[in-house]
Structures are given as structure tokens and as C-alpha cells.
Length: 260
Image (cartoon, rainbow, N blue to C red; front, top):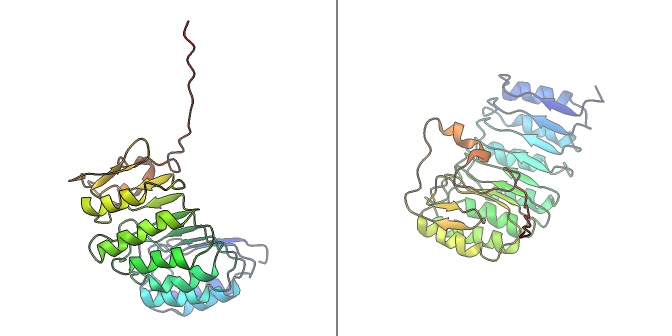
């Protein structure tokens, strides 16, 4: 029906063919699509259907077994979605950071990008470079957690993160949890954050650092690893190594004491 504005197909056992048929049947005025937890890895034809969804502002494709070829095809077909403000490609097997650069260049309205639990290592620097140099808009939230940033091209990744801290003025929320960042890597990040006045939520649990009560990144050795099911630790509000004004919704409170 033409009045449909949101389509939620999470965990429905959809194939790539089924996803394409559903997307092609949806109205062009659709604003939100959630196809998460469906295996869409055996074909990329479903990506073509996004060409008609020009009013889309939120897209969730978490845990769809997407690799680089599907990611490139998807991003190329999202070019017409000029209202897109949120993209969730988390829990896939994407490693190509450069694939995002054309999208970032064209979409100044993109506010939230979630790519946690992928395979970004050495290519993470290309993604960060794309955000810094191509995206001249208002990216406010970036989730890179559970990507091996500290294992592959770690110093370059850290230097690009420092550039992100210094050159972007809109980023308010950043998740770097469990990215294999050592104490040396975290020292580089801490120095880069010294003059940042816009980031109010930072998550670094599982790395060799923590965020203190004043919001400063403090490098330390042997940060305790998460216990139990790693997926259960993804609740950012309960992150013991973070001091996040965004997730925890902290507010500054002034107390005035008058003696007598």
C-alpha cells in the first residue's frame, strides 16, 4: 500500500531473492527498512531495489552475512536515497573501508553509521579518511567496535582517528570497544582528544584504556576482558570503561551551598 512508511523484516528467514521481491513491492515513499538477521549473501540482485526507495532515511542490514561485493553493490544503489540519515551494517563480514567513500561524499545528511563487528582492520583508515575528507555533513554517531583496528595498520588507524577528533565538529558519539588497541595506541588517541570539545560519548571497553569521570581517555595496561557471551556485552549503557553522556543520559547538575 502507498501509505506504508516502515518495513520490518528482521529474522524472517528471507533469501536474497525473497528480499528483492519484497523490496520491489514496497512504495517509493518508504522511509525505514530493517532486513537484519536474514542471510542475503548468495546474491546481490536485491540491492538494485533500493534505487526506487528515494525517500529512505533509515536502513538496517545487521547480521545479513554481507561481504565486500554486496556492500559495494548496496552503497552504489543507495546513491538516490538523498534523505538517508542512518545506516546499520553491523555484524557482517565487510572489510573494505574505501567502498564507503563515494557514499560519504554524496550524503552530507548522514548522521549515524554503525559498522561494528565486521572485518575492518587495515581498511579502517580508508573509512575514516572518507569520513574526514569526503563527508562534509553532520555525522554524529560512529560505531567501529569489535573490529581489529589494533591488529592491522594500527598506527595509521590511530592517526586517522586523531584526525577525526581534530577535524570533525559534529561527531558526538564514538564506540571503539574491543578493537585490540594497546596502551601505546590509546596514548596516541588520548593526545588527539585533548583539544576535542564535541565528543561527549566515547566507549573503549576491552582495550588498554578507560574513560574517567571527566570524559578523558586514560591509557592503562591489562584492561579486563569481557566475560561470557561477547554479544551480551554490547549494551553500551552498562560499559564499565565508558563515561558516556549520550547512552547514560547524564546531565550536569550544579549544587549551591549557602553556609548557615
